[in-house]
Amino acid sequence: MQDIFEEYLREKEPQKKEKGYAWHTAIGLQAVDGLETSEYLIDTAKKNIEGDITFEEANKLIHSYYKENIKHIGNDRTEEADKVSVRIAQILSEKSFVFSPAQYISIHKRLFDGVYKHAGEIRDYNITKAEWVLDGDTVMYGGALDLRATLDYDFSVEKEFSYKGLSIDETIKHLAVFISRLWQIHVFGEGNTRTTAVFFIKYLKTLGFDVTNDIFAENAWYFRNSLVRANYTNLKKDVHETTEFLEFFLRNLLLGENNELKNRYLHIKSFSKCQNDTLDDGLNVTLEESVVLNLLKENPKITQKQISTEIKKSDRTVKRIILSLQEKEIIVREGGKRFGYWKILKEI
Image 1 (tube, helix red, strand yellow):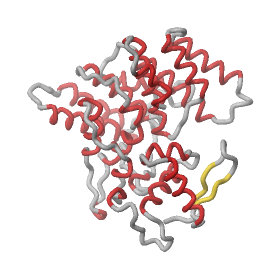
Image 2 (cartoon, rainbow, N blue to C red):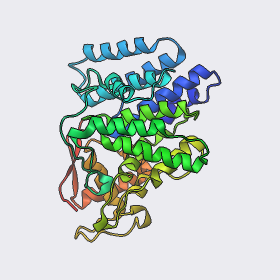
Image 3 (cartoon, rainbow, N blue to C red):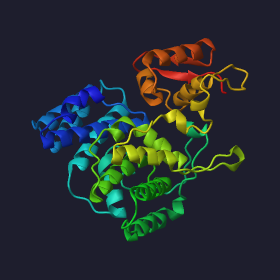
Image 4 (cartoon, rainbow, N blue to C red):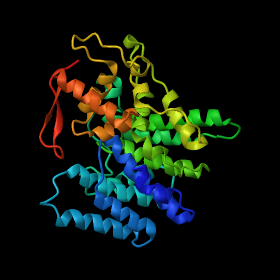
């Protein structure tokens, strides 16, 4: 995706450059839910960046595109990715922002109106989500009965907090704690990470930070996984909640540092430290293969290109790992190349 917008990210004209980053981030954030946008969305984005169409016109074009081609477009998640991307880009390009729970809820409403029935509504049920980074375990999210009170409390504490006199390290630590706690509430049934990311970017701008770079776009899934790790403790497995990974992300985002943002580093089994070791599972599966297998469990429709991006490995390496898992009869491909998915045959 970097190549698609590279000319705009290097653009000297401020308005085009800012729009380029907004679109780049908007499309990149779809990765947190394993979504991909269409070529039509990319073309629409370029027209907007060039100034040929407004955001309102871009929204209408995408809406019309799916309305007219409803019988020929078989992937509802692509439609979701396209529609939400336009809205994220528009919100990120706007100068208005108010730090409040109402603004946070409003962003969710704007992003997912017509996509989710519960857009802009606080969930009234409890949730769990199996996370590959937690080896299938879940974060303890906010309870449905306490969501609004918890949300209001977190906002009130942050609003009263003073950054005066803090070092940049202390500031980043505090920001990591604030955003991880906000995300952990998980106010909405779906779309929490994208909503939180958009809100956070807008908030950071009010604090004077320049966040017009590609960190969110290129590392959206790392951002989500770091939020997961910031809210998970399992004493039996000697795993403790930590904002360390989120701080690495923020230091790259806000300070231009070059910390390695690799998803496998976040896995509770620490795959990065022993990629070629095998698991004691009777299947002779390497830890490297297990990382990929967990990605397939999380999103059976994930592409090899997406896997390559997430684990920061070459396409050739990913193909080798996939082939090995197939040869061991652990996974099998069901359906065609375009609309197929990966089926897990054996659990490890």
